[in-house]
Length: 77
Image (tube, rainbow, N blue to C red; front, side, top):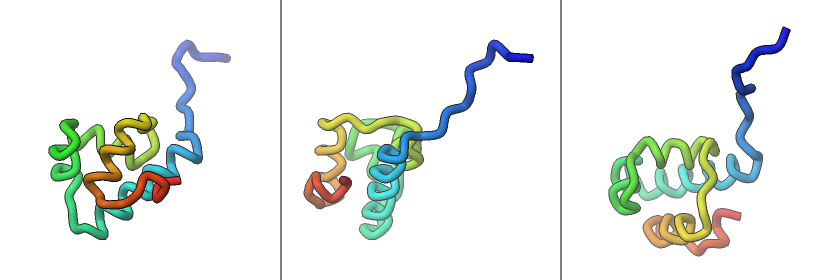
């Protein structure tokens, strides 16, 4: 019996990898999700989604994150 509800999808492994790298560097800098979110002009919930890989990070947003976290863009790939 099938349901009309959409199946829960797992995050893409690349999105998860990028999110893990964001989280790792943020923690190394002793920065909270709220602090990163404020620097980016988004909510802390959005940062959580990036870190969990549930939301893909656009190239321009990834560059902004790299600037805030003081790493080159290639750090995330």
